[in-house]
Each structure stands twice: as C-alpha cells, then as structure tokens.
Image (cartoon, rainbow, N blue to C red):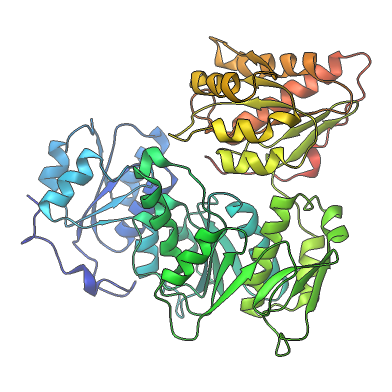
Length: 511
C-alpha cells in the first residue's frame, strides 16, 4: 500500500517535460476539475484512478477512452480499490474538506495531496515559455474582477484567458496548443488551500468576510487560505484599502524582491493607490510623478453606462484596473475595455422594471455579497435564504432592517434566518416559503414578494446563502427567479415590466 517508502520525490516533478510516467495517482472527484486532472495526467503517462461516489455516465465512459481507471465507492472510509492502487499522490477536487476521511488516511500514509491548481502550476510550461499568472481571490467579486482584468489585458494586446474557479479549468488553459501571455486565474479558498509554490505576476485579495466556515473550520483558516495568493508575487500585491485584513495579508506575505503593494478604494488615492477623485477613476500607482499627479482611467458616468456603478462593482473595477496597470495596459485602453464590458447574469441584474424593480443577485451566496447588494437600494423586498455554510446572518439583518419593506425566506435552513428577523428586525414583515416541491420555491417566493411590494420598491434576490439545497446552482436559482418574474409580470394586466435578460451574457459558474 502507499506510504513514505513508496512515494516518489515529487519535488522533481515541476515541469510538463519531467518524467511523470508510471506515477500512481488517485483523483478524488469526477466533476469538471476531476476530469481535467485525469485527462492531463493520463496524457503524461501516469497511472490514474478516479474515485468518487458517483459520476456523469458520459464522463465515466470518457475515462475509459483516455486510459484512466474509475472507482465508484463509498468515501466514508478509504475504499479498498484506492488502497490497492497504492497512490503516490492524491489530487483532490476543491469540494473535499481537509478533514475528509480519505484525506486523513492519506496524511497517515504520507501520501501528498495536491489540488488542480498546484498541478497546473507545475505543468505550465507545456507550450514553451509559461504564461504569467494574475491571481484573484476574495470572498466576493472574484468573477467580475477576473473577467474585467482579462478584458483589459486582451484590449491591451495580450493573448489571455480567464480560468480557474470561473469555470474553465486551469489545466485546460495550460494545455492550449497556442499558449497564452497571461492567465487571469480566479481562485477559491478551497483551491488555495491545496496549492503551494505559486508565484503570480500580480495578485489580489478583494475582501475577506466570514464564509465557508463549515469547510475551513474557522475564520482563521479561511483567512490563511486567502492569503496564500500573495505568496511569491513578483510585481504587484493589490489590496483593498477598506478591508484591513487584505492589507495585513500583504504585510505578512513573503514576496519576490521589488514587488509593490498597491491599494484600491473609493476615496482619493494615495501615491501607490487606485481610487476616485471627483467621480473620476484615477491611477496614482503606475506613473513616475505619482507624488504629485494622477492618470485618469474613466469616469463614474462611464461605468454607469455599462451597469458597473454599484459600489461593489466599482470596487471590482478599481481592483482590475490595478492589475491591468501592473501589466502595463494604458489608461485609454482600460477605459475602452470598460465601455465594452457586460456584467454577468445573476450579478445585480435587472430582470424587469416597472412600478417595481426586480433584481437578480443570486450570485450573492454569502452575507458579505448580500450586504453590498442590499446597500445599493433604498426600499427592498428581500428574497433570502438557502445553505448558510456555518455563517451567522443576524448582523446582516440588523444592518439593513430599516431599508426592508419585507422579507421572503426560502431555503432549508430557514430557522436561523427567521430567528434573526425576530430578534433584530421585528418590525419587518416576514413570509416563509415552505414548498415541498422545489420547483415551486421560486414561483411562490416571487408571488409573495409581488404581493407585498409597493411602487418604487426593489424586489431583490440576494439570498446570502448557497443554493444547492433547493437548486442546482446559483445560476439555476437566478434563472428560476427571472422566469417567475416574467410570468408574474405577464399575468399582471397592469404591469409594465421590461425584460432585461438579453442584455447579459450567461454564466457557467456554480456556488
């Protein structure tokens, strides 16, 4: 069986062109990530066994085609087939908690555990000179910032792609035959937990709030995973001037000599910051005369034309601008990229507008994201609830109680939400959706919201929770909300709702 004496020296495996042949690898999980890992390692000649409790039949068939083994097994303990495979390495999909029984077994046996990000970093030289990585993490705003940064670099002439937690596995990007100048990599805390040794060109932690505590076990562990993105950064560590934790993580990071700390925030920027002066986004970080001068990037009016004027989206713009300027993209090019940008579906997206404004922010899967969304409106009927992931929602309810017309509570973990309203917002009308059929959850929520909403109100889907209790993903939750709104508006003879869905591109991301 696997153990310290059987483990190959993995320190030698730091290139696509190293000898990976015959390496016995166990891959935990068969989703997008697991399949990309198996496909990559079999191409390198490794002996791969993919282990999961279940899998898509098409992907299982493809495993046989590419030459990887497949084991469907109960993972409450190390399955016999995996033990017999005697893995020298486990590559784990991001959903596996660090205290998972199979990972505890691996630790006991001295078997190293990597994630797909660690593997991709080691293999990044397949097509020649490796692409530089621009690494992006944070509790909220990762996807928008990643997309913005990639758009800015592409407008500046770089061959670039957005990948990672955004939906395209990094392993697929590093195997693109044409290669890239830069990869803009969105990284979740799960992915960072299993990654070591990265050295990005530039990096950012957008913000850090309580989230995924059920996975990490504590806020301190979650914070530490986020901070790993700054390690060994070469050019710029970008941090949030309004979030002291991000500054502290930069200060704690061991970076490449010469790397600069670049702040971003909504106030007047200091000499190494990106900020706002009289409604103008300005760069005071990447110019020689930064002590006395600033470069104009764009105006807030420009951002409003492309639905980027909400405060949390402006923050994403500032962070992406800092990363793009670190790469050398010119200010006018950044402005052009911004004016051509479209925010993803399910991110503060108008679904219908009439006497009542209907807004889909299903991507607000934690209280920090919902806080930003709620703060953008004055009078709200709030659709809230889902899987809380160990996070206390009470402070969010207390903070926004005065702006709430009513709350419509969905999800399987309704009791903590109802208790938060009873304690902190007893004056707010609360209605509960207790639908046995999950297909009726969103139609019921939308109907109830429509009954209590008044002219001028915003009905806001910002659940502050993950979606997988009653929906496939946050995008499924948002799509169901949009359909229900359209049906309600169409059935309302006096309604004048306007469907804005076609203005936004689709998103493939999950919670």
